[in-house]
Image (tube, rainbow, N blue to C red; front, side, top):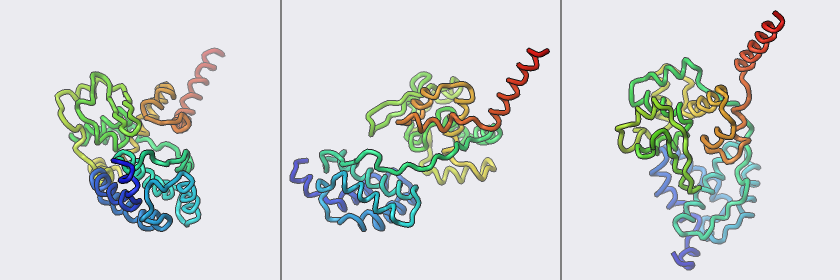
Length: 278
């Protein structure tokens, strides 16, 4: 696309195309409703919808963030709203509407750290023991720590021997995750998409009903993978790479010792002291 055409694309036009070609295809109906509402209530209240995309600068996005924080909304909601605009601009860049998306560093607010919420051993057994395809999907998720969006895009040809190849399109990278032999064997002979589901919300409700676990959420399987890795002595650096975290500080939340781990460690130390004194 030439420069004149680039100048003619407005923020409203880019937003409409992003919603039509990405959100409607890759997101759930509820996501579509929420995103459309956020754009109407916030994006086009701050920015003139007719603003040419190449008129946007990093300073404008910083002012937008400041404006959002003055509203009576949570930091999490502010993050979602800013992520919408960031996605629109990256979409515009990918489609030639912009030469370069004007995304400033640290645009999204830093949210308070939340403790991991892994599944218990009994809960893991319950969700992984369900009939296929639900049981297989849960075993795959617990064994890889993949995000739901990564999981539903996974294809059989992404399994290469004992490794899972996670293709990160935006970063133009491929992440490799070791796969336990039992799960690798289950993947053999499969073709196409490995996960025949799309909506995380629908899947969550199905597993809650089938496994009798009202607190189940697909993301808890990612927490489970990470916490088990650390509990078994796996390194934080390797976990960062497998989870796809840009910063090690994000991964460090899994390094917090649970009460059970502290108690087990105390019992081990005490047992050593008793044996030495005996």
